[in-house]
Length: 282
Length: 316
Image 1: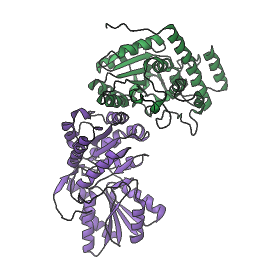
Image 2: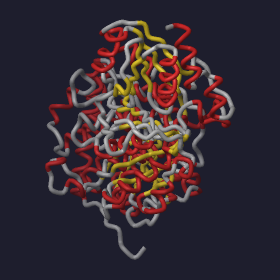
Image 3: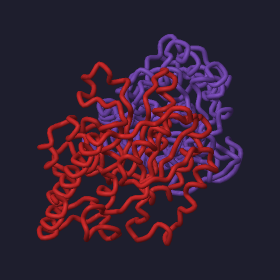
């Protein structure tokens, strides 16, 4: 590669770290408030969403009132249960007031348990039933290509989600059609509801699998802000679709939740909430 | 509305679908077509030949085809997705429900090979539940056209309407029933195509031809029945059904589908809530199909005009 990839400045790093801190507190507060949700897989996704929305993506907080609406990069949250992280980053980027976050999962709220594009501003497509986000991205990328629209399509998938066969139909689709505007992330926290992904239905060697399907594949630390940024910049230079397999910690940032499958889909009680907020405020 | 000149020439409604897609593709650049390795059977191959850059073959991957269509629709495209009714609605039900209908995306599913008349391929390929599955999903419009004229108009409607539509086409070649110059498709309408007083027969799709034949046979036996053609299974034209039930007080539904969930159910639901009369549902009972020639199967399951007349006379 001739082009020297730029690193983030100290200022950028500080800004994103501060955003990540806000997002983690939002996530725990929203899930505690709703008395339900998925803390583990939301907390593992924070750095990647923060870097994408702050530094990588062409975003449109004014949504369809923006003159550049059609040019926006698309973000598809294929693992829809990470909705709290998505709503938080959207609110913190100005799509809607952070005050609305308290409605999460409550009757009449725009912030449905899993993202609905008919409800919340900034949500591109409705997700929640796993294994569909990548096909959705393929359709969007094909449509953008027909329109000669150079926007990127980011997809955020869970690792357990890759057990859905439909994901691999989409992997073949992206490869067949050379959809190099697709930049997919796998949140590789190695845990799913019933335990370890490798014990339930093993995914490894995951990078090899994507490469065998014709994709460009990278492995990074999914909590390293600069590494995420560099990986996306590299992906943008590729003539093939890219998957960034991001090693993450499920429940990252809350000591008692980290690497515990039991915190996939459980809300903290009042006492646990207080401990979590104390840890996240440090 | 009906063809004045009777002809026994049978035409392929799938070919009519293919031609209509090409016609629409020429006037609207946003029309795109997806198939799942059955483009020669569904006849989307006609579109693929003329507009290769707007045709996407998902391969044998119906789930991917449906969700890719959903994605395409978000960029302003109008995707038509085709495969056999069995795989469109069975294999990809979750995708249709969650990725197409829940967000009310502008995707058109035109499934061919609906019903028992798939023929020799047998039960694994005979979709007898597809209309029921699609009718259940909020935001979905469900249409079962009876002939080429109606297929042409229903496809044109689907292209103009903003939202999900399911259109079920039969493999069977059918005679022309409607006159192209006077037929008007209306998504809110069922059509009284013959007036009568002794009973109401409600049908759609390829069984409309059989229902018309049946009515002729019944008239020879002194029974004057009304025929309602109900191409749109959802939304239901309640007024037309209720008015006819009030007139005849006896209803039969006739369809190439399970008697559970489609026309039979829609009519029973409507009448029981508004004007209860006795309804007999004729179709495939709660069972799987089997291999056989189309006509043999129609006779075996007692869906030909002659069989229908016998069944109705037994109880009327």
